[in-house]
Length: 72
Image (cartoon, rainbow, N blue to C red; front, side, top):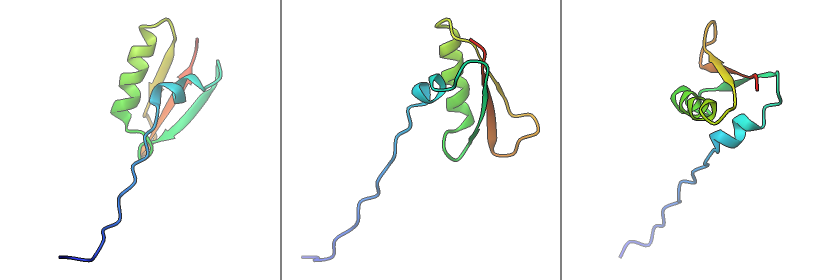
């Protein structure tokens, strides 16, 4: 029997929807893509825009970041 124990790798989960809804109206935030991938942000923004919210995303001029603006 092997008596060595392996350490578990802990995963953190990020609630993208709650993160986006925490942005105050009319303001912008920059989210690093190492925290939340750009694809997950764009997908969440698309779903929220269908639910009567209004968000815009932009990666123009940014490296490894996404700018999210909440308009409504």
